Image 1 (cartoon, rainbow, N blue to C red):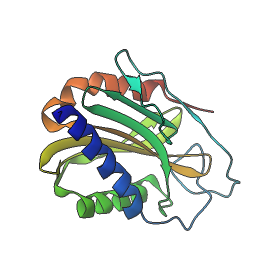
Image 2 (image 1 turned 90 degrees about the vertical axis):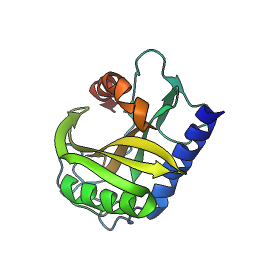
Image 3 (image 1 turned 30 degrees about the vertical axis):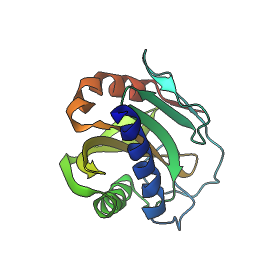
Image 4 (image 1 turned 90 degrees about the horizontal axis):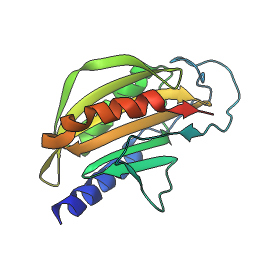
Length: 175
């Protein structure tokens, strides 16, 4: 029962953040870099091959959503107005600080590459309905949009799946 409640609360919390995200006023994010450049939006899809044990969430409306035990992985576009990955990360952190209780960021955002695209990632812990949670968020620009890649789990079990999270990130492709 606790596992189901965690998944429900984590899913609701993540979807609630979409409502907190600032609306975009720029439509030209470079699909290959972390800066804005003139271009036309085009449909981009994400391809994910998760490690063993990750199950696709049936009926999801997201481009990618999987779960393994109490852990979740999601990928979706978000409407941030930042013109750089750093500004998107700052906007997201402000939204999280307002949406969750006891938010604690772990280290500084770091630059990584996902699917051949520059990305920024950061980690934080927080309370969701009284439960201690940990999240990894990755943001990048693809197809003229901001993509958010999210990993979340109970704070005490999150780190045990970091190898899986890294494998998922390494295998992501944008088409």
